[in-house]
Image (cartoon, rainbow, N blue to C red; front, side, top):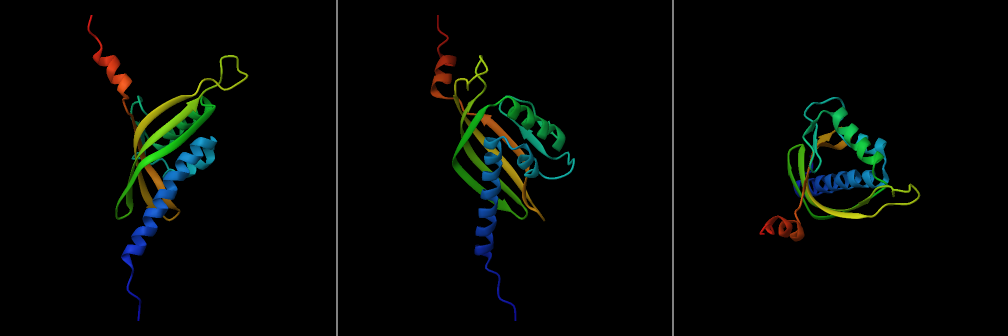
Length: 160
């Protein structure tokens, strides 16, 4: 006689696995580990893989998406993500993660000897994962900048 499945325990395990896959994505970016980052995306040249970096057009296809991350990593000396407002929704073999990326980053200094000034940025992100035999893999990442009050003030302060 088989035991009844504990659907709540399975759902909790799936959510934990998706959260771990999401965390691994940001940790690979922080380390500048292109190989690890590449392994987190759906395999093959699946044209449904997509990415939108803040201010960029839609990138489609695994090769184009991974090239964008290689470019970002090559031009970023330091990046750290503090994720807040993380939410996970699931249906079947698809998971949707929403979060706020509190980003601290910097490029090389102009003299080339040290890290340049650090810049903070807020980005809201949606990461879509698909279940595969090798675990949860990124299907799509979409990041959109969050306007701060000072950004809005500058736009509104157009009076002569």
